[in-house]
Length: 173
Image (cartoon, rainbow, N blue to C red):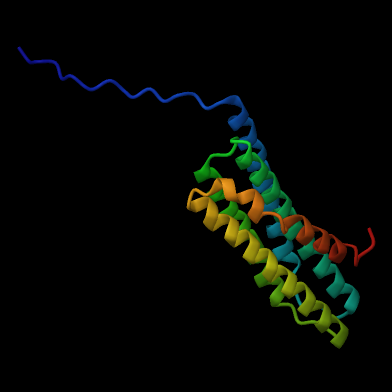
């Protein structure tokens, strides 16, 4: 008679706390929103023949990047309150950084139509570089498990967001 094969009992996985599940859903929705904005922006980046068209591209780029910054701010706040685990925080910051990188690449490829637009481009590229650096520092700290340092490291984000808002206002709504 064959002996029954004994398998070790399956490890019980503790349930995910409700607050983490809810935050996870909100962050996923925010990440999807950023992705949709990036993809829609990618379709909008062709050459600019007028200053007005170029300002529209600046405003659209600023909007997408500002959305990434605001999502990062929410994420840092959640991590500070223990509602966003380290791996999730790191992964989401990486996605936000990638979204900004995509905008920088798209925007950087647009030829400014005038000297005035060239100056505007320089200002925007400089600001986008600052955003990339800030998000990169946050991602690295999160990967290293330094979640307690994120709030201090995120202090420049509100100022960057405000500066981007001003670029968004180049085009009246």
